[in-house]
Length: 250
Image 1 (cartoon, rainbow, N blue to C red):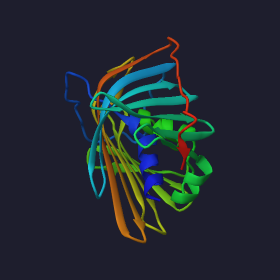
Image 2: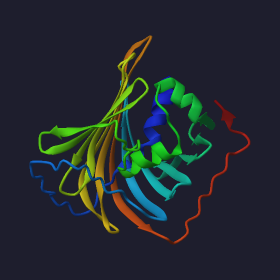
Image 3: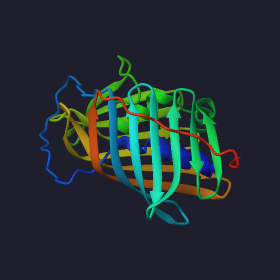
């Protein structure tokens, strides 16, 4: 279970990044009654980021190169102190994580992740979370309101309640919380430091937190993200990915 939660965090880790310059974004109450969320649109995205992983035992600091072909594939290459530590490939079929340090790899299907967290997880959910787009389509059954100076959108997916908080000025999601009612397992996404990327705002800092119960007690995994580069465009990118034959599948 711990490795699966860690994998889920990696899957949504592209949700934000940090630019060299930081600008404040205004917030003004009250929020409008009609909910409006702007989504990032692009053909390809690529960037470089610093990721800080924290769990109940240790903290890990890694660098990552990231590439996305929208609605298709997410590719990540990780390094620690200049040494390649691993890579990840997320597509519509599965998620594959390769550890060069341990010489092993993991393959997870979305059905398995969905059953573990009692929430429908697929490629579109992961990509949306990484881009700061809504992870579930809005519909007339959702609850719309306000929380402080932000719009609030409450959605249901089976036993999972999803709370979205949206900045009404830039029309971007700043906070998402998913809570599973029977276990109280929780996933939180926090977006901040919004900067222009293409023709829309994009969160250049982010925090992903997962809280879940196991037989050993409550587990809390956290990732902080700081990008030093993020670009979007239509220029085709490559996604090289191979698994050495000597690596063991776990």
